[in-house]
Amino acid sequence: QVQLVESGGGLVQAGGSLRLSCAASGRAYGMGWFRQAPGKEREFVAHHTKLGGVTKYADSAKGRFTISRDNAKQTVSLQMNSLKPEDTAVYYCAAWGYGSGYDSTPRYWGRGTQVTVSS
Image (cartoon, rainbow, N blue to C red):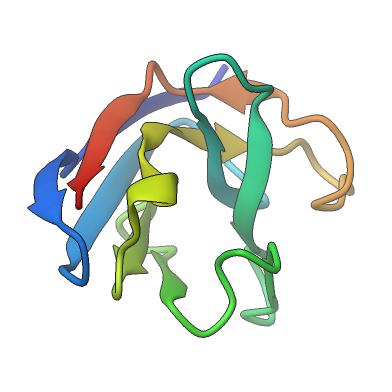
């Protein structure tokens, strides 16, 4: 079992930055982030492999968000810059099982952290 605990959400003005962090207990392989805005489906944001440092981003995140990972501490972070009101959502940390890629359903989920971007 892997437990994921997010931190770092909050309220920020458009153009500002936030950094989300997620701490994992247990063995996690791929780790990343999803988000869900009100009335919308949960969507993929970013993924980081455990080995090799390979990253993958949704088009909406490319150039603005950066995912990083510390395997020793079992943490994954999401640096979000140039935030827009449409980035407002609950952000969920996710962890995939062994051998599962970013395009598969994560096995574990955090409880989520709210990010609100005001215009």
